[in-house]
Amino acid sequence: DNIPINQIRRASYWSHLSTTGSNKVLILENADRMHESSRNSLLKILEEPPEDVFLILLTGNKGAMISTILSRVRSYSFVERSIRETREVLRRIFQEEDEKYSTIRNYFSYWQELNPEIFTKLVRKYVDLLLADKKEDLDVLTEMKTLLSTKEKRSSVSFFLEELVNIFYERYKSGQLSPSRLQRWLSLTQNKHTALNRLNLNPNLVIESLFYSLSECAQ
Image (cartoon, rainbow, N blue to C red; front, top):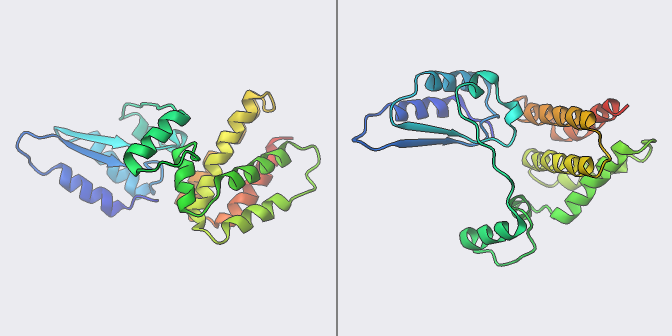
């Protein structure tokens, strides 16, 4: 998921090649998951962008983007598709007629052999335990690590963290989370997600260490 510096350098070289009147578009996915060397190289492009070159940085975690990059770009936010729109995208682009997928993320989770219903149920149990007065039953941590043990761990834990944020917002809307606790939990989760990709953390430890960090924050 990280964007290596060599890729940024190749992009810089390509963007400076002369063309005859045509625009160039460079799209960088997971722009928040760059090591420092890659970010510095990207900043050089953003500080003096070549003419007729458009750079599009994609991220699902804007808070993990450094301020020096954010100050040089124009930000756009996109709302999540409705279930009807999602099914239309799956039908047109992926020729998927099955209507059991409520989000694009659920569709791709099946490709990773993660049943979204079972997966979401476990994430909900994880959050229920965080909100419980007594945190004695920690089986959900073992269940989650067992579920992910046979998968591609790093991307699966990323799915877990993304679903966790969705459940946080859900509990906030239902009144179970205060605005201040929601912000603290979102910050801790975003930081852990960033560290997972940049610092090559052990995915299993991420699930457990985040739980205890969130629990302490809930006191």
